[in-house]
Image (tube, rainbow, N blue to C red; front, side, top):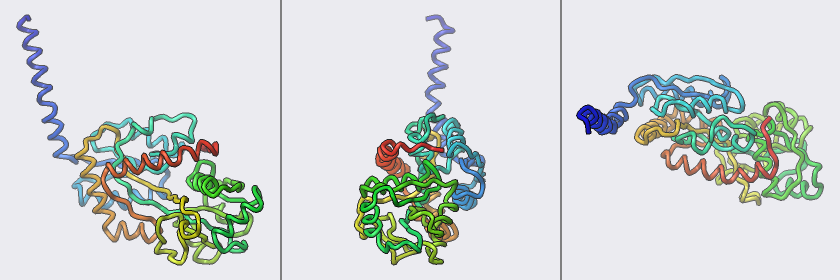
Length: 327
């Protein structure tokens, strides 16, 4: 082997030997610069309102600013794609949702990223439980009453949602599937007009997020029949769970979580997850979310990854069998 070739080979081997140490050093010093939280939805929306208090608290725990950047469009896919293609160095994160992290891949004909491989799940932030409710003027007092009426007259009862492919729509299709019902889906452009028609009696029922429908429940415009959670909710403790009401298989919530680009080092993911746990334990942060009806998350990256896999497997057949497509 010529001397120059041998020298080059030794140099390359030396560089290769130094790379793991360099990577370990970068992980140990993380974060050394501002962190970016990409919110793939518009400012002022639910995900944005979740991200900003968290981003304001984390600098005290991580020692670097956290900047929120809204990149809305295509049901969250535009912002999610930006994160999926970002460097896996711990400085770009997505405040994602059930859509961007699990079900959009089944709702859209074309996806800019491969959901199962694009991200490193880091922390479940919150889960907003669903409430099965009817208009106050409707005759049904219990979930069993509603199910019986739907079975007695298939295709006559109507249920509103925030639009085709939204979590409200998916929740309805899961409800219909598990209860064996034929209920007409009425999509709206957002949950607010659906709730307006529910209170006015123009539709029969809705399965909505608790924070959205809580004002109508409190002022008597809508009647809650059951909460789709394992246990009762402190905001409406008198309302039974779906299991108590006779439909134990129906559990559903709209969840949100933090994810990094795939390949982000595990120590960075773990440190961010620990910081999120601490932030959610702060009454100013977690307490505010809980007051609005959210169930606080937290936990390890492995736990969040397992949760996403479980939700994906559970909801894929529902979406495919119902032929749900995003608007």
